Length: 178
Image 1 (cartoon, rainbow, N blue to C red):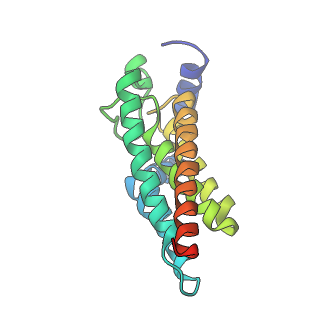
Image 2 (cartoon, rainbow, N blue to C red):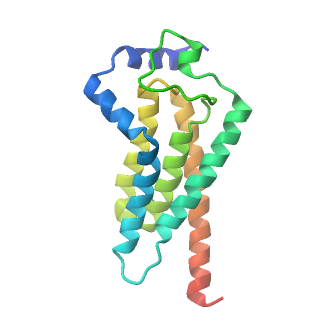
Image 3 (spheres, rainbow, N blue to C red):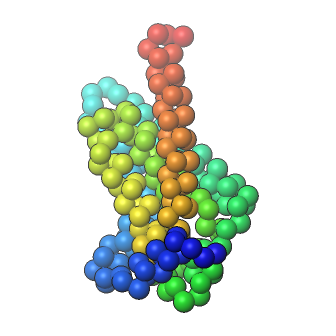
């Protein structure tokens, strides 16, 4: 692959700043996109009286569904990672063995964040900002093209909305005693 996306990834890789690289590696870690985001939903749930942890549960379901769908998408697209397309691109960290499109990090982070954002609107910008930072970190580290993370974010947001609809429908059934 050649073109503007590869040029952008190459440019970023050539201009990394070590303190930012360390931060982006931390943000890209599996626990950040899963435990931290879902934990934020759980803490917000527990702060409300007599409420089940629906944000944490919904975020977990959305996260899992987005992960499975993104893995299926990777099998369909079979897109090389930037460092495979251009071996001169140095990756900051490990190169995953899977296909690049869509970004599972972006998909799972946005899926969980969207559910939490609907259930706890005061946290909306915080959790969506964290999801965006996770997505950007993947390009910064050189393991994804921008379109990989945009597709992953869109997939995750769609899964998050679908899970929110499910949570809302279940909550309405419980409230009405059906």
